[in-house]
Image (tube, rainbow, N blue to C red; front, side, top):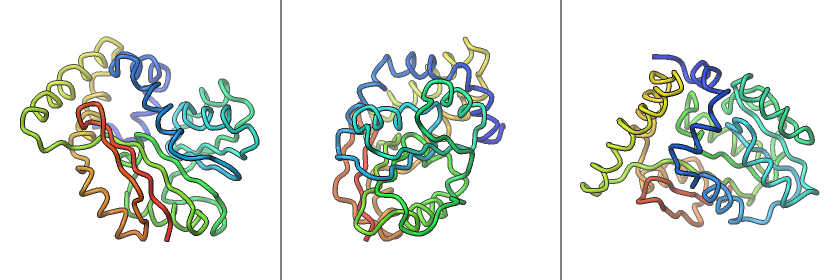
Length: 220
């Protein structure tokens, strides 16, 4: 099975197109809702930034923010830099951020926390670079414990997504991503992980039949 960084390097050129297909175009609405849960200002860090969609939406809506996108995939960042020249994009892992303590006013991560090398180590670093009482915003796929919805979700994860990946010659990579979604936590389980890492979860909300959850957490 390919490593996560290698997986995203491999799918970089088709990533945006496949996202649009497997979400039926809904990912744009999800991302719009995501950035609307806070009023951004100051220094904003977007982790697992991919091709830069989230951080560019923030920059467009709040042009005075100082925006940085970080991702370990150089091929993803190459696309992001071509698309959004006014934003800083840096190749790095979430577990090893080259910034001083209390540096950022906001940290965001969408559909990326499950693919970090270590979720706990990433949250430790995020907490370190985030200013006190400031916000960490996460959007991620979620495990659903409803039996009927679980059956529907599994059909989507293990048939639809890999099949679309196959059409683009990326079956193994998208099967790997489907498994990472299926192995992630339920919203309540992930809230407990955030709280153990000294974040206060002010709000979390699931949508799209519980498959996607947005978390709004404050550094204590």
